[in-house]
Length: 117
Image (cartoon, rainbow, N blue to C red):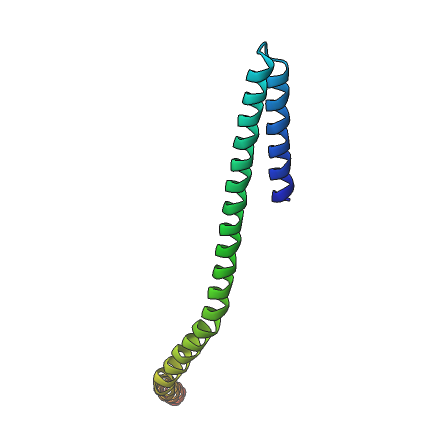
């Protein structure tokens, strides 16, 4: 899609420049010289665009390679963090569960005591 746009842009530039030169009130030598300069400029512009497109393509490939390499490393790091959190949280969770059991026992004892009053 980008290539078609660039081709259309270059074609339109060259055609517009050529028509402008052909219909301008100049001598044949001036018109040919101007047309030659316009074609050289269009060629340089196309070469610049091609280089820019190639640099963009290379950058996109490098970015894709970097992301492909980093995702497994990131996943490994996240997995290690999760495991470390679980290791640290597990004793805390057990203590909280134990405290909840003790509280439930106290509540049950209070309810039993209330019934006997």
